[in-house]
Length: 87
Image 1: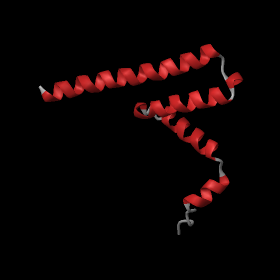
Image 2: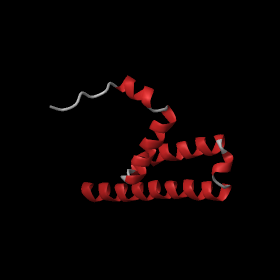
Image 3: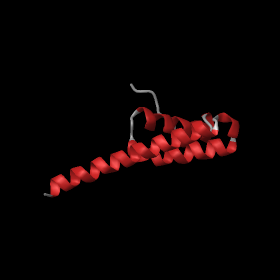
Image 4: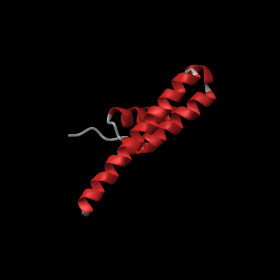
């Protein structure tokens, strides 16, 4: 018999919203889910604005630009594949 699952409200009591968000962002990066990299960029921006000493300006810029580059590359490949399908 499977153990009973906890309702979502109970999970919120066990982990803070920041921990849940961090865990979600980590999964996005680990799974290379490029379509959600915009959310990761928003999270990095929010955290570095809140705790500026966490990353240097250069590290933050490199991280954000790297995320944007991946998204841009993903969109280029997607558009190219769609064009090929439509031809």
